[in-house]
Amino acid sequence: MKRSTRIRIVVALCTWIVFGFCTKLGNEYQPFFQHYSLENVNNVNVSAAATDNEQAFIEWSSNEHNIRQMLLERSRSIIPVWMEQYVMWHQEQRRKFLTNTSLHDTKFMVVGCMENQKCGGLSDRMKPLPFYLMLANMTQRVLLFHWTKPCPLEQFLVPPDENGINWMIEGTPVTLQEIRNQTNYVNGHASSLSYEVRMLAGLVDGGDRSYLSTCKVLNVNLDGGQQIKEAVSLFNRWRKEPGQSPPSWAPDSSYLGWNPAAHIPQREMLEDVYRLLFQPSPGVERAIFDQMNYLGIQGQNFIAVQVRAKHPKFIPIGIMDSRWKLDMLENVTYDNPKFNAYLEHTFDNAIGCVQNISNEIELPIYLASDSKFGNLYYKNSSLSIRVPTYTKGDPLHIDSNRFQGRDPKDFYQVFIDNFIMQKATCLSHSGGFGVLALRLNNNLTECEVEHTSHECPINWKQREMQKDRSKI
Image 1 (spheres, helix red, strand yellow):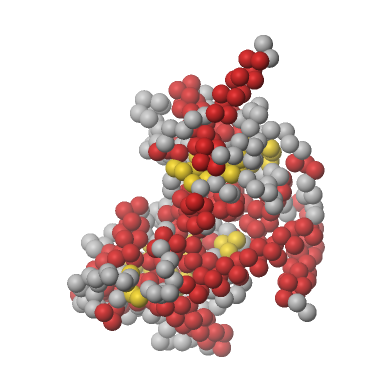
Image 2 (cartoon, rainbow, N blue to C red):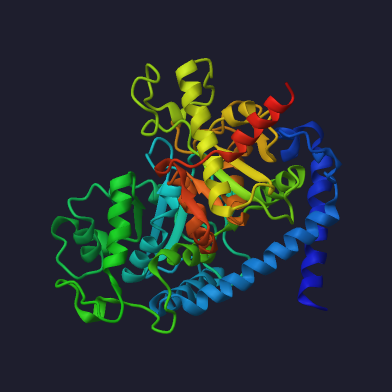
């Protein structure tokens, strides 16, 4: 039996079991496409899409699985030698846990994000992934992840089906009490993250913090933009490439070697590490399929626009009374003329930029934003814009404490947007979250623009005005 046939049979059986269970639950179960109201603002007949076509989903899911495995195999062939060796070592430790969960000589490193901790949005949480892997390797610890903010990480992302790193706490001897131990804790507030890493790796004397190098469970959380930048910078400095001299404090034995045959730029490393660690959870994967189907972009070429409309740093002074934490609010009213005028220009410019770099005016445009303003603004536009309409207000920020305990589906849109933007042929973005999509699919770097740094011609709007004048 072929591998693809086995996958289809397994997925079909799982789908039959899950849907049978959900039918038994009755009203307690709501598919994602009922939880969200999805509409194409240009009145394309998306209702013709087969919402209950399970066979289409099974085939799509199987194809995505095969693509992920192919890309994961590619990643493992080009990552640094030390990273490949760590992956194999980590997999061996996990196999040992199957027969003996009380391995006293095993040490762990848990990357956490729990209630009331500052962790950042999805982009901030993903940027340090190569650093986390580097630190786990240097300290010979089994890398694990434990998010409970805003919901358990497993609701959104799970380890790869095979050939990657299983970072789940389940199946290890690590306890919740150990994860919440604030004594064995490292974050970016250390006087020097570089010194902290060297101490943990046993390269320097740690003094009164030396116990961290021997504790069973080391908890790590980088809780701010500056700490994340330091981690990324530290990873970069510890790379070894032809002609690059090691730092004066790092002996050759501790310096990280690169795969000389790879010729892979550093910015691509996040893509490969992400593949080693994550794939969409079953719920998110189904939600992605449903949304792309409803919006008519499944299997189609499209361009994408990402607008961080509510970020305080982008909103000019004097536009509104208070910009602070605006991006953390779910229900924002759009009745301020100055704010609306700013948003109109921001969205129009973003679309103008992607059409300018792609030289495409007919392709559908997927619009990802932290605001429902775009849905309202382009309601009657002639542009082929595909927008998911969030019925409960603006999409939620995953780092807001006020949303703790909400239904995991309320946060799906963050992960859906990230996935779909990676599928676009060109991307216009606001930086930050938009850049994450670039880093997870480096092919996009050939056709991308940060629209917040450019004023682009809004040719499509001029054409609309000309059409309106011709009707008079």
